[in-house]
Amino acid sequence: MDIQSTVKNLHPLEVRIIRHYKSGDELTIEKVESDLGFKPGNGNQALSWLQSKEIVQELRREMRIYYELTELGREWKEKGTPEERMIELVRNRKEITLPDIAQALGLDNKDVGSAFGTLSKLGIFAMNGAKRVFLLRAAQMMESGKPFGAEADQLFPIVRGLLDKAHAAPNYILANDDLSQAERVAIVGISKKRGASGSPFRIIERETVVFAFTAVRDELAGALDAAGITGDEIGTLTPEMLSDGSWKGRAFRSYNVKVPPTRLIVGRTNPYAKFLEDVKDKLVSLGFEEFDGPLVETEFWNSDALFMPQFHSARDIHDVYHVAEPEKAQSIEEPWLSNIAEAHENGGKTGSRGWNYTFDREFTRRLILRSQGTVLSAKQLPTAKIPGKYFGMARCFRYDRVDATHLSDFYQTEGIVLGEEVNLRTLLGFLEMFAVEVAGAKDVKYVPGYFPFTEPSVEVHIKHPVLGWFELGGSGIFRPEVTQSLGVSVPVAAWGIGIDRMALMALGLNDLRELFSNDIENVRLRRADA
Image 1 (cartoon, rainbow, N blue to C red):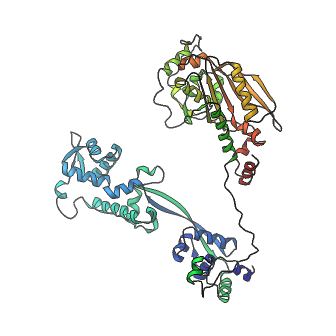
Image 2: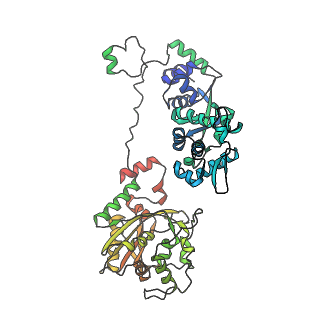
Image 3: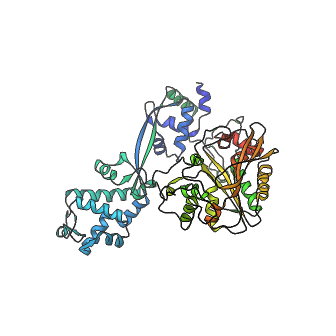
């Protein structure tokens, strides 16, 4: 290491660390910022610079625990803990039921039940045969001193003290290392790491990196002393300093005018996000209304409402990602459930013979991740205007082999057109618009397809200059079993286009995975080209 050259390039923050600490000292971000009065973030910045120059090195990593006071905890601090508030209430009411306690105090039943369990274990509360809560130690409570018993009299002040201490702490955070043994035991019982909204404290685990100086520290410190560099040099000469003369007699930090200027990076919209917005703008300009829906759907809307039989192999690609908890929806809207069930079993009032099987009304409530955008169209039909045009951008999930034209989660642009005059020609016109005007394809062809919910069914294919021909999406005219079961009696043209694949053509890409690249430079370049 060239000591003289290094000294000239040290930042004042680095200089102050080298001069303040000595060889053998252990350094952390928190310690440096506290000892030297650095602004938040400056400690991390300075230690990172020193590490890159091999002036400090990582010694070890330590996991430290902190407790953050939640919004509920701040409410406890102001109004009292549920136990404190319940004791005061029961003392005044003599006897009261748990639901009445919850209503009087504005607490959830589960919180009241939990607090009652704690107080009953401490021998403070009991419940009589009429399910009414009363104080076991009512007489003792009227006296001064310690009315509850050793365990309770120790616990209550500790919890109260933790609430007060956290409320006064920076950012409402307490360090586990700063707590007494009794406080550590108490706070564990009222803290959660996940789902802490119902707990007064949230557990935070932070990894602390401990640094130590390398062998060059003493030599650098000597060179700094010889050069008279203290770390307090002025880095910026301001108009105020010139006006009041405070710059006089001060040392200034030297600058290397040959250093290249910092690259100015201008923020840009992600090219794929911009493409999606452009497609939306295009459809809205054509008079379409946008619809949307949740990522989690029932089997009913995802498949059953689309006349896909519950036993059919065509559902295999849609029957993949299930929700573990809750497993099923509580109910399905009527009369759509009964209408669809009848259409599956015997055709109902649609003129169809149906699929001739017993429709499973329990299975249809199962929750899954949306596998196709057509679910949005099905849910729109009961409230759709006639004539009407609707579209949606739907994120879908399927288990698929990931390659240049397939992803396990992807976007579809889904649309329907309803009206007495709607026919296949109407549909083909919209498909051509997507292929030519939106995707930018020059070669387009239509291929007969099969979907359980449309007849006729059409696939639109486009030719990519590198990947060749591939399917852009499927479409067709909804079958009566779908439309009439959901209250629509006019023809409905529907399509589900792989908008990711349209983006391949429009953005000049050769692989779907490039749409979600973490290569920022590539994303910026693609946006500039677009």
